Length: 591
Image (tube, rainbow, N blue to C red; front, side):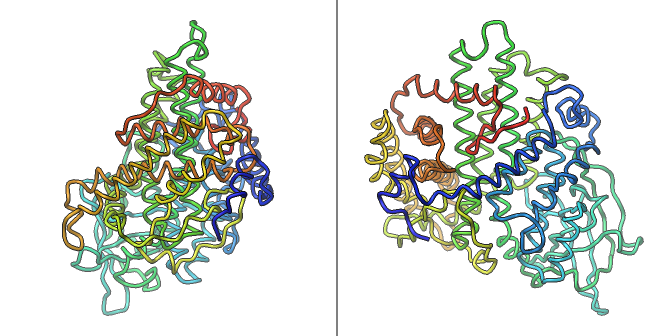
């Protein structure tokens, strides 16, 4: 796992890279096409997996039973399970991609039966014994339902309010007590993964896995449905346990180590969620384009404001995809330094995409307020994105993971190993996840320094393209911002954990996150991203992405030629017409 040599980078950008391996790309594109064909055109009236049916189920606060059967018949549960346990998952970088067809249609279904089982299962597969791992894999593979009772965090969503407690009893059993009002799939789960308080210390937690149907009826009480503002089909509800006995084999991992064990599992979860959610944003952008095209003044082709918003949103989706790709691959390639990168991805990607979608409301015009018909899907997906983003893990929690690492960025800190080029290349196969290395928190970050090395290589990489001066100027501005972040990181005050209270740590963590996003974009472009592709090797998308990121961190930006936004807007219009995915892969869609 080494950095590409100078000539290899130029070859990658020009599409002449002999290391490009199409097999992995061909397989994932074929799989996405298979899923899309099985779901059909979502805009078509009468399609039971179309937007009309999804909107109807959302109004009824249900998950479509037809959709759930289709999810299972298309083999989606196997995509959640690693190959070593009998599934199809060959890497966390691929999971988000194959789940996008469902996320772009029905986020409630995809979140409940795609993301939630993955979240719970990761806790078991990385921390449990062979029996527990096999049991979880069996439930997921047959399409069984999994619930996750999350750890309590102050000032968080309802899913993180309240918590259970557990203690050992003299008979060797565990006794579970407490109530939680919001657990996704609570009343239908075959297995529940519970984060339970097991001591007086702040980190005294354990992880339990149990089947709620097998506990004594006197020990559990089903509470009412918990309704959400978005993804209204979620079947979230509460469970209360009173001195409920559980066998000792319910314990996953070591007693009292639940926080450390969850930190081992969260990197993959943090990487996968934003990747899945790009499918949701794809639909929102596609919906805005369709609304603009239906208006009398000629659609987005003749409206400069609409063209700018469409191009900017597309650039933001590509930023999120670059970061998700990099984070997903880091779990396998850089397990002992992926914790911060994946937290950055979970924090900044939904934030960037969410802000872009709100800007698109102007493109929607009066159609934004539609309650029925295909225009209504835009506002629904906007609500859904907000709910599932904060229902999982909020920005504040992610920043609390990022902030403690900031002092390690200070000038004079040891330089980490260079970032491997394979981090940016979807076509290169990945090794299996190494759970032991994932347990080490606080590895180095080679991605921030990648900008400086990339800046040195840009002159040669840009010899085949116009507009190189603007791209070099943008990268220089980002490198200057990276240097300033390092200087400010060295001024953070406090003891071992005191810098968390430094008022500069959270704003600095946001700027740092935006810089990592820029590095991911540059890395994807320099290393040919997803193989030879005329659009991806054109620097126009990278110029707009970096321009928007540099503006977000508050630095001056050079004037942006109108042709740059025009190039991206035209690409969006073409992908809506064909249609193809509004992401790095650009796979053909059913509609």
